[in-house]
Length: 423
Image (cartoon, rainbow, N blue to C red; front, side, top):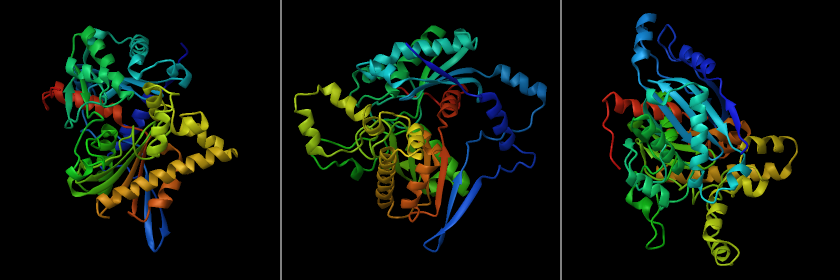
C-alpha cells in the first residue's frame, strides 16, 4: 500500500495564530476586507484564517503547570481523500498530520467501511512517530458518521452506534469509518471514545422533510461540525449572536453541504450524498429517469451505482481527479474541459445558495463559504458573482476548523462542563 504523509507545520502556524488572537490591546486581529461596487451597493468580501480564542495572560510557570494537568485527546477525522489526525493537550494541539490517500488506493475497497483497518494502522503509526503512549490518552474523539437523526452535542461511541454505521442504513460516507477506529484505540487505551456534532444533526422544519414522493422523506445530512464553526466565526465578524442572524453556509469539500441557518438552526440542507450540486466526488442531483434506466440496465450492481453517485461522480467522473486544486491548475493552463466543469460546479453551488435564500424569505445577513475548495479564489469568485445580490456580506473561511472543534467537544465532557449523550 502506498501512502503519502503530508506533515503540517502546525507549531509555526499555531504560534502565529495565538499571537494574532491575543494582542496586548485585547482587540481581535483585523481581517482583510476588499469591497467592490455592484448594482449600487458595496459587496464586502472577507477571507480570514481561523483563530483560537484569546486567553488571559498567565505566568510561564503557571501555564506550564496547567498544560501538564490538561488531558491528552486523540482526534481522528477521516476525509474522502485524507485522514487527519492530531493529539491535543486541552485545547492546544501538540502534533497533527494530514495523511493523504491516492484515489487508486481507496478504489480497491468494496465498501467505505472496509477502509477501517488500513486507516486505523495509519493512526497507530502517527502515534508511534510522535511517541504518544496510548495509556496517556484521556479520550479519543471522531467526527461521527451517517447516523439516525440526532441533536447536536457530544455522544459516547457505543455498540448501537457502530451497528448502525456498519449497516449504513443512512448511506455510505467516509465519516462512518472513524467511529470504529476511535472505539478500538480507546478500548486499548482504557479511555472513552466520543463523536461530536455528527453529520446527521437534524434540525429540519416539517416542510423541509416533504420530498414529493409519499413514503420517501428528505434527510438532514450535512457537515455540521465545520459549518457550525464557520457560522460562529461569521457572527464574530458581524458583531452578532448566532440566534440573531440568518446565514447561508456552504461547506465545499469532497462533498458539498449548503444550508439556510435560521437563528442558529440548520432548518434545511441538500443531502450531500444525494442532492444539490455535484462536488469533487459526488454526482449530486441527477435526472431521475435516466438514473432509473441505469439502475435497471443490468450493467451495474446496487453497490456500483452507489459508488458512482457518492465516490466516482462530480470532478472524478468528468476529469478523473477528486482534487479541486488540481482541476483549477489544469484550467489555468488552458484545459477547456476542466474550466467548463469547474464553472458548472460553481453554477450549481450558486443556484443552491439562491434556493436557500428563498427559505429565509430573502432575509440573509451573510453568505458563508468554507471547506477545502474555498482555498481556490477562482471558484469562490465565480460563486460570488452569481450570489452577491443576496447579501452584502460574502465571507470566506477556507479549510476546516474541525480538529479543534472535536477536541473542544471531548474536553467539555472530560471537564464536566457538558454531559455526554447516549446514542
